[in-house]
Length: 188
Length: 105
Image (cartoon, rainbow over all chains, first blue to last red; front, side, top):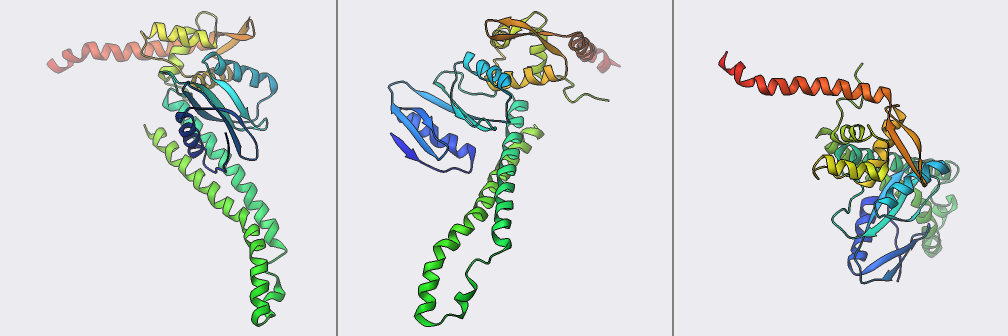
C-alpha cells in the first residue's frame, strides 16, 4: 500500500502513521516527496518520530545502535538532520523518551526545526515578492471578458506564488504547538 | 555557579551510579532497571541524550568497545558530582529524621 501525504506537524504525522499501523500495516519506506509505503502484517507495530540535528557519521552509528538495542529499527531520516523515523514491534515499552527532561529537549528541537524551515520559506517568499507583484500589472488595465479570462488564467500561478507564504504560516503553527508542549514540560 | 544539570535528575543520577562500573548503553538501562527495582526503565532516546550530555560535560567517558558498542565509565569529575549529591541528599534525609524532634521544640 502506498499513500501520499504532506505534513507540517511532526506529531500529526506520527499519529497518522500509527493509525495506519493499527490497521495491520508495517511501514517499509518513506520517501522525501511524501510517499509512505506499507505492507500487510499480522503483527502490531508502533512508529516514533525523533528529531535530531545533523550527525557526523560516527555519532550517527552510535545513535542508531542504542535505538536498535532497544528493538527499534530505522526506517529513514535525512542526513542533514530533522525527522528520524523509528519503528518497532508493539510491546510494553513503546516510547523513545522516558522522562520530562528528554521530552522537553525533544520539543525544543522540534521548535528549532520548524523555525528553520519556516525562516527558509519566509526568505523565499521575500525573494519571490521583492521584484514582482502577485498579478501581472497589465491585468488591471484590461476590460470586460478579457479581464476575467486573464484573471482566471493568472490565478493558479498566484496561488502557487502564495504557497511559500502558506508554508510559513503552517510552520509557525507547528512551532507554536511545540512551544506550548515544551513550556508545559518545563514548568513541571 | 550552579551547574545546569544540578541537582541531578533521576535519570542522570541513576546513569552516573550505574557507570561506576564500565557498561555500554543498553547494559546501563538493564543495570538501572535492576538497581531501581524495576521502577526506572529508560527509553532509547532518553538514554542516548543523557549519555551524550554527561559525556559532553566530562562526567562520563568512553573507555573502549564491546563489539561495536561503546563502553562508558564515570570520570573523576563525575564521581565528585556524585559525592556532592550524596552530601545534599544525606542532609535532606537527616531533616526527615529530625522532623519529629523539631516539632517537639
